Amino acid sequence: MTTAPGLSNLTSAITNVNNATIIPTVPASVTQTIHYVTANDGVLGGLCIVAGFVMLLFGFRLYKPTIFLAGTILGSITVYSILAHFRPDSGYQPNDENVMTWVPICLGALCGTILLILHSLSLVVVGGLGGLFFSFFILGWKPFGLIEQGAGRTVFILAFIIIGILAIFYIEKVMVIVSTSMSGAYGITFGIDCFAKTGFTQDMGIVLSEGADVALDKFQSDPKIVALGVSCIFLAVVGIVVQFKSNANKAKHSH
Image (cartoon, rainbow, N blue to C red; front, side, top):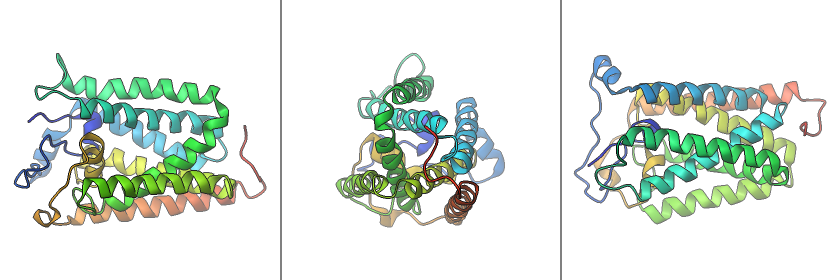
């Protein structure tokens, strides 16, 4: 079994989730936690926190940077999902960690650049991304997700993506603010989890890598996961309030 630090720290990647006896090792002390934080974890966590704050507080006002970030995030998630799905047992050689971290980030940045050019697709991506992260947020309250069946989790996520895409065409300002605030809040909490390793974002990697069924009765909710979830809600609410107040006189975002 090969673990994938970096982007795979969206969860503790498990290559055989059908085996219910496989439980990721949880650090028992601060010293152990530090041991699990790699250089790629630190860089990725820092990038996510910075990008999250930009989307959280300035998603509506700084719409072009938001488009780039949204395209980068969506592209990175897609590329990571493909790499994880076809990942050999021995990992990608010669350096699996770098491949699983930097290939998605670099290709994701390319997707963000393309989205800036294809501006007409920006609302679709922003709305869909909000729905995507809202679904991940709901699933993340318990290790390996609140829905046991892989197919059920996939349908759940797709439903929220579609809802986000449809809603943004009817209530554009509200959805851009809510979507960017939710995405930003989740980005910040994910960045924190790169260091804290609470397992809050653990479900995300399982869905992206295999989407197989998981026996949830083998796991218990961790107070740290609940705390990070509450923090995500708090940050999202702060972002929504700040963005609505700072953009009260603007009916539409700046193109």
